[in-house]
Amino acid sequence: MNPQELIGQQITDILVSSKMKFGWLDEAEVFIRLASGKIIGIPYDLDADEVEMTIKKEVESLFKDLSDEPIYHVNPEGKTIAEVVAAREQRASTFWGRVKATLGLGEGIPREYKPYKVEYQENKCKYLKGQRITDLLQFDPDEPKVVVELENGYLFTEVTMAPHGTGGAGLHLFSNIEELESRYGADYKRLSNYLKK
Image (cartoon, rainbow, N blue to C red; front, side):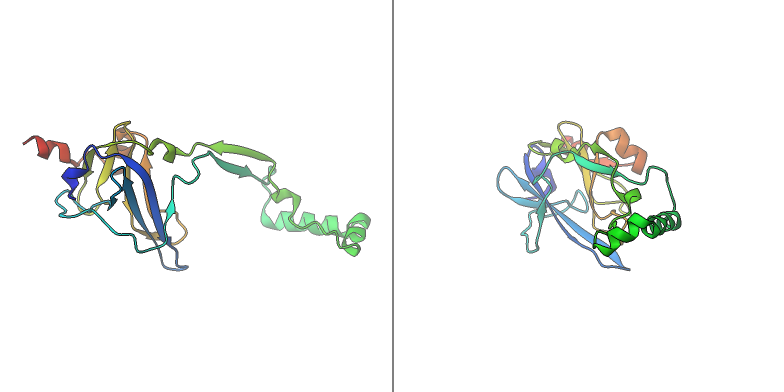
């Protein structure tokens, strides 16, 4: 299967294999399961001969849980770590603090770091499931792999390596073409333009 054959294919699942190494680079690989049952990878360029792949690694489905993601807010006063430690030591030195410590009922997590508010961020992966691929875009070879465009206007690509702890390796999702262009610019080739020739 080549990139041209991806146009019109429906996505049923997106699987990610990731590996993190402290002090080095995080690595990730994205696999796409199509309605036909085939597994493909995101190609490096539009001229790739073969995009079909066999998964030989442990992967996790991005569609396993499509519920919104919680964001926990802690430390409403914005205290520094030193201020939190000092406040905890002061509470522990009071009469009730010493009684609790004697009974084995220490404070545990300082109250400044217990969530006081939870907000939910939309999980945009839900907009990828069941969508058909409408086009593939390729930037300069120094930029990321090919970008996959879907019928609902969402786009995504894969970043295979990023500095450890940055969260940069893996699937990069864009809600629309404007968001993609604000990140990478507008100098790209579309596969659909080549297919019309």
